[in-house]
Length: 360
Ligand SMILES: Nc1ncnc2c1ncn2[C@@H]1O[C@H](COP(=O)(O)OP(=O)(O)OP(=O)(O)O)[C@@H](O)[C@H]1O
Ligand SMILES: [Mg+2]
Image 1 (cartoon, rainbow, N blue to C red):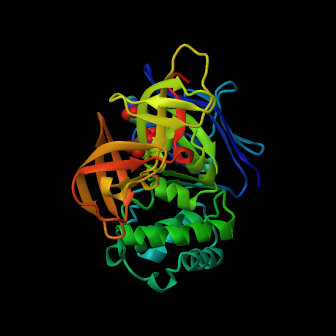
Image 2 (image 1 turned 45 degrees about the horizontal axis):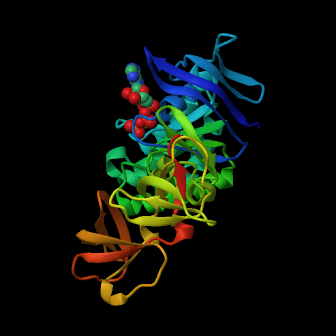
């Protein structure tokens, strides 16, 4: 099989560009996730690949097969693209048993009965639902229904697997398990997969690579490690891993790095080069788990210490989430330490502070 290549994909609704000049390649057998907030264009991109939506411009091809090309006015109908689609609402046909649901796409494709029977068995065993073949959809749990929906797609061995928030109807625990078997199944079948989610944790856990989208564009594409450890913008740092963002004026700090001056005049050392450009507005992202909290009695000696005030504390089981005000900025801090009182010192280690110049 071949790579899926999307080039300059654009979908406009009047003056609004739901997808704006998006290009990416999904390698043969790769699991690529489109991750981004609601309305950023994930489903529109996926539906354009499936042929359920007609883009305004661009090109979509897999090997020699051109799905869509605006210049050549090619728009292959969905049934000729051989894509397997699974949506959030998995909608099994309620009047058909599990077996009949999975068999249905083969009947549409006029696959001979004996061959169809074997394929249905194969698809049901892939998702470990062979013992439920005789049941009706309403006799299954949400997770089981989702597995049947996936079997119904896998049964005709699609060229591409396209999944739009397929786990979001499941409760937290089931979701976690479904994630495991989905990833396992995908890697066993080596099926080229485009997965859509707004859940960053799911994206990090499942993907070979992630394309982070915002406002119809891909703002960063890389491995989960790249995206998490080296976000290219404050948006990515915040969307993937919930960073705190501090903004302020950057001033030179002698030989080494710069100082970020916050609105309440507190200062942070930042390890980045000063620059000559007109604006010296800087944003610094730091993750909640990288900030340490102390009371004055702890006498912390770290370099980047800010004064703050705890305004909320939530016990979350394994850790405590503190909401801390520093000047006019509100920070989330994850810790395991119980801190009483409200006046605190926050340590923001220099190597954990990710700087982004604001006009870039
Ligand atoms: N038929 C339409 N007419 C006008 N605008 C549309 C239409 N369909 C989608 N849009 C707009 O296009 C943008 C992208 O929509 P899309 O469904 O791709 O978002 P999404 O990233 O999948 O979001 P979500 O996470 O909420 O599913 C949205 O701003 C949406 O309002
Ligand atoms: Mg969507």
